[in-house]
Image (tube, rainbow, N blue to C red; front, side, top):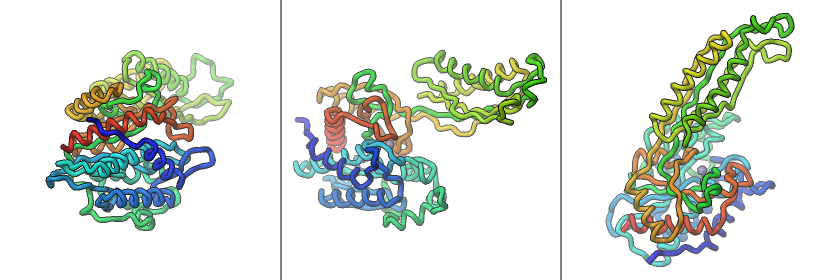
Length: 407
Ligand SMILES: [Zn+2]
C-alpha cells in the first residue's frame, strides 16, 4: 500500500521557510550565509528536532537530520538546498528540502520502522552566487574542493566564507559529514520548459549534461571605418559573427539534446567609426554524453578556423572550463520508474540542463533526481512556479521510493 503525503502541511512548510526571505516582487532572497539563510536554517533545524530526528551540522554548514534504522547500515539520503539566488524563485532547492521533511514527518507519525537509517540533508551554498563556486559543500564531500579552499572564498564585499559560516552559527564539526549513503535522491523543480511543453508532471532524471566553456579570440587589423576599402579589411568582429551563426547551426545539425550558446562578446577598439581589430566571444556547449561534448568542442575549433579564413584574420580557441556529464544510477532509475508506474504517476525521462548537488553526490553514492514541472519553464526569478498537484505526485514518488530503498 503506498503511503500518502500531507500536501497542505507541505505547502504551509514551504510558505513558512519562504516567508523569512520574501521579496516585494514575490520571490525569495535566501542567499548563502546571509541572515535570511540563517533564519531558514533555524526553522529547518527546529522542524527536524520536532520530528524526532537526530540533527547535526558539519564543518561546511550542511545540515543533516537522521532517523535511526533497525540496523546500523549506511542511510538512504534525500534533500536539496535552502540557499537561493537574489530575488529567486520559491521552489528552487527549498522544495526538495521541505519534501524531504514531509517524508520524515509521514514516516514518523505512521511509526514506520525502516531497516536502514533515513537522512534528510540540506547542503550549504548550492547556488554559488555570493561565494563561488556553486555546489560547494557537496563538492567538498566528493573531494572536488578542499575545506581550506572553501573557507577562504570571499564575496564581492571581501567577506570570508569561513567567517560568515561561523557568524550565522553553522560552522559545525568535520566528523558530522555524511559517512556515505546507499542512495541519494534529490527532488527539484525542472527549471526549464521540457515537462511543461510535453505535459508531464514529473521527470525521472537520467543525469546531468556535460558543459564546456570556450573563449575564441579573433585578431585582425583595427582601422578607420572611412578610408579602408571593403576588400582590404581584416575585420575580427565579422569573423566572430560568422562563428556565432556557425555555432547555432552546428547545435541544430547535431540535434537532440545538444545546445550551444555564444553569450558574451568583447570588441576592440569598440567604437562606432573603427573596424574591430579584436573580437573575443564565449561559446558554451552542452551535451549529456562525453563523446557528444567532445565532438561539439572539436567542431567549434574547425568552424572558428573557417570563420577566420573567410575574413583573413587569426584565431585562437581556448577551453576555459569543462564539467563532464553525469549519469545517474541505472538501478535507482529503474526503482523509481517501477514505483511511478505503481503509483500511477506519469513521468518523463530526461537529462538535467542545470547543475545540482546530485552531480557531486553521484560521485560518492548511487544517485537519482526527481524533477517537478516548472510552469512556463521559469526559474531563478519570482515567476518560478509549480502546480501543487504535480508536487504531490513527485513527493509521493519520493516518499515511497525512499521507503522501498530503506526496507
Ligand atoms: Zn537548485
